[in-house]
Amino acid sequence: VFNIAEGRGNSRNREAQVPAVLEMLNIPYSGSDPQCLSICLDKPMTKKLVAAAGVPTPKWKVLTSNEQIRELARDSFPFPVFLKPAHEGSSKGIHLGFRFETPEPMIEVATVLLGRYQQPVLAEEFIDGDEVTVGIVGNSSPKVIGIMRILPRDKRQNFIYSLEVKRNWEELVDYECPAQLDADILERITDFSLRAYETLGCRDFARLDFRVSPTGTPHFIE
Image (tube, rainbow, N blue to C red; front, side):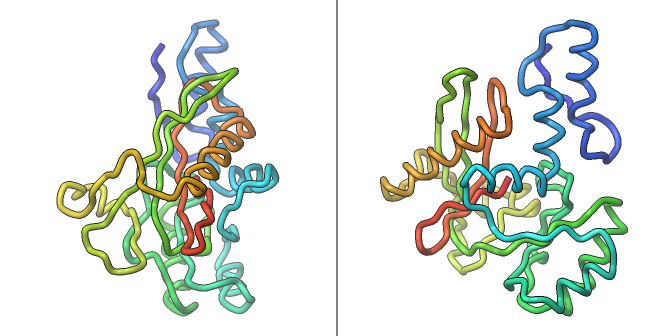
């Protein structure tokens, strides 16, 4: 089976449903196994494991209640902050207006997200820099097959590769592959990507997303 199934429902384990059934029936399939897929759809869990492996990732907090949202607004969490559902993929819940400089509007939108998606909200430090995506294939000796940079045609700061941008990509962005970044940055992206791939137990193929800070540090996103 060439597995591209997303599963059903909105649980963080839904992408593991089909490969779990295939394993039970002893049917070979492509891609990662149920454990890896469950972990990688859970953005906070993925960030914990990748950070433990020494890969930089933006600071984050998981919000599961209105009280936690208000606490985030009161503590020393670094702004600007970006909000996203904690257990979604394909840019679901990633919107242009979800970057916040101050707590007040963040509180309102985070409260709406909790209700709309019926799952935790991830509040993440916003890294203002290049958006980069990395393709990896392989198992015992995985290899980076490409590093692509997403270049906004509108050169204003605070670019967000949002659902709106992806739906209108032909007019809003250019894709630069291979990415024209400094050799040392590309080397770090490659190292961090392979480290994350192996730490998470990915198999056959994967895509990893990074934001490169103005100082040249690649930060793993998901």
